[in-house]
Length: 135
Image (cartoon, rainbow, N blue to C red; front, side):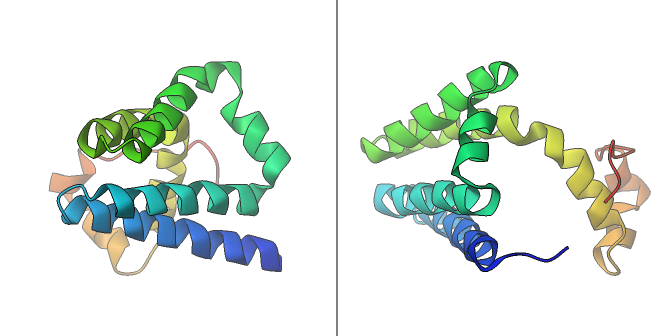
């Protein structure tokens, strides 16, 4: 699968967004870093799948609770309540993107170094067994 230049930029923006979010949490919930991470993450998602598809994804009826929590958490982080905002945002993220986790874990099981680690009996008990779609 080939990515267009805009999608490559979107992957970079999303990766930097996750990096700044993690860095903000490691710096004891620094609201500035977390806000930068949120803005980069959302703009990266929009660049990867397109603005129209992003709006369709976030406005689907079954994803409404996750969307409200995710965007509410971002608003709380931007309003200088980073701990509460991060908690609400994680809840919304899990509701929005929880359907993709089996696919991601199925892909990770096929990787050379990570695959055997995820197949270890102690770890495989906590991982989803099958992915619903092929990677």
